[in-house]
Image 1 (cartoon, rainbow, N blue to C red):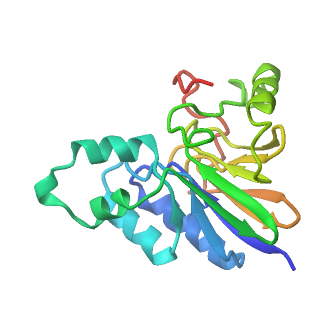
Image 2: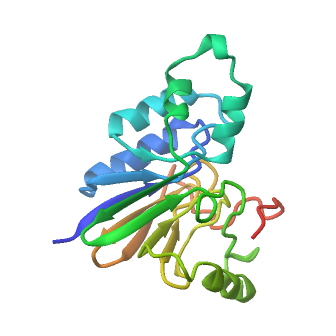
Length: 207
C-alpha cells in the first residue's frame, strides 16, 4: 500500500500558502509532513505560521533564516515561535514504507548554506551541477534526500538518493507529495499561481 509524505520548505513566515499546502495534504491522504527549514525570514507572521506547523504535527528542521531570527530574538521576550525554533534539529531521518528519508536544509550532513542548486536560469537541469552533486552525494545512504534553501523545485536522482526540493511555499508557490515505496513525486501549485521553478536566480547559494 502506498504511503504519502507531504513536503514543504522555505515558508518564510507566510501562513496562507502553508495553509493551502496542508489542506492539499489532508485531501490527498498524506500521513506525514516534512518541512526542510526556513520557517522564519521575509514574512512577518511567524507566530501563526508556527501554529499551523504545530497543529499539523509537521516534522521540521532548522534553516539558516531560523538561526538568524533566533540570534536576533530578545531573550526576555520569548514566545511560542522562539520556543518552537529552539527545539528544531539540523537534520531529520526517518523510515517510511521501508525507505530511509533524510531531511536537511542545504546539503548533507547538516549544512544550512551549502545548497543544492541544480537548475539553470530557465529551469533546466545544469549538467555540470548534476555531475557535481552525483559525486558529492554518492555516500548518502538514504534513499530519499529532502532539501530546501535554494528556492528551486526538482526531484532528481543524484548519486544514490532521490533528491527532492519541494520549493518555497511563498516564493516558488509549490509543495510536493512523495509516494512510497514507489518513489514518485508530485508537485502542486499554490495560491492560484504557476510554479516558479527557479526563484531569485541571482542569489548566491553555493555548491
